[in-house]
Length: 544
Image (cartoon, rainbow, N blue to C red; front, top):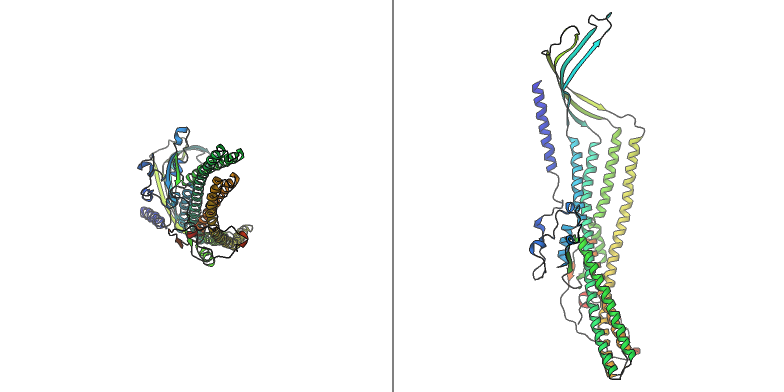
């Protein structure tokens, strides 16, 4: 019997070791992992004020989940306003390492991995150790009818110890294979969900960075407008003192200056909001405020055609893979539910050992000898079968339910593919429209600059009024705002195409110098509108 016990324990040790090996062999290559080795450099030549190297290293917050439970309770813990210039590439790296939503998605991968290991354990036997009284003390008295027993009064007092070890191995389990397949597909689906979240979060961070660049450009435009208004107000006051201008012209210049100050105030507020919004998605430490290291400029030219972009999106998007995995998961769950009405065959080995010390059912007139003891051991092995013959239709109902879910996922696949196609088309046409608007706004800015210059010369010569200068200045400000909007829409559409197609076929812009040429003709009725090809945005974005 002792040999049987030793063999059972040896078998249990081998099985536990095998389960650890299976767990160790699960794929880890696609699991996101962040460490100090992934830290980024903020770039050479960038001046960072009031922040040392250790503080920069702290931008990568590894313990996002534990630290999120500790919130600042005093104003001093919020830190100051320390500005750090970041490039677009650095924003992408920081959001991947710091964003708490991505951290949560990476934890979901570990959760799905743990569930997969749990399902894989169905291939291995279970070992149960049961102890009845470790030890157990028995004390009692018993009385029987004296007509039927020679010892009507008995008593008992003894110690009992009973241990059993059971090894059970399912030889035939119809639900095992589909359950493992569903867990494996769920694990793959979770990894696909992380990639979707990563790409969407990066795109969101890029949009916020472009919005910050747009706000910075708005502050610059507002500042330049105030300077231009101050020049106009100075000229109006000088002419008014000289007696060659009216008080109305001075008031018009002051009104334009007030409007420009309002514009600057609004753009400064937009800038602060954009900075905080970017800091939120990057999950930067308290008191650290990101700024744009570069001004808004066209990132490049999208080379693929619309058809090539759509085909690439179909192959790249993990959303479609998720729906395919949903179909597979639901089919596996349906098969597992149907297996609930099929037989399960298991091999069971049970070893039991019992020992007692003392006596039971001894005549009450005699004393109990506690030195009396005994033990016994048994080992049984056999096959057990469980076959649910009737469950009220439960298995078939669950089977049909999961099959309908798979059918629903197929319909969602078609809907998702149409949505992906529509997103690519929308970004492609927005990019094309923004490209055209950049050229249009470029020409409007150059014309507005020249119109403002001529208006000032005419006003200084006394051949026009201040109203013409104010209108020209207002037109220039509006043109510059619309031009910066067009560049932001262009860059956003370009980033969306990269996110939605997985392609990186973007031709970088080359630095070039564009000569300004303004039509000096005053005969508007003689100007003919002729169609002209749209030039690339890289060339159209250059202003003198």
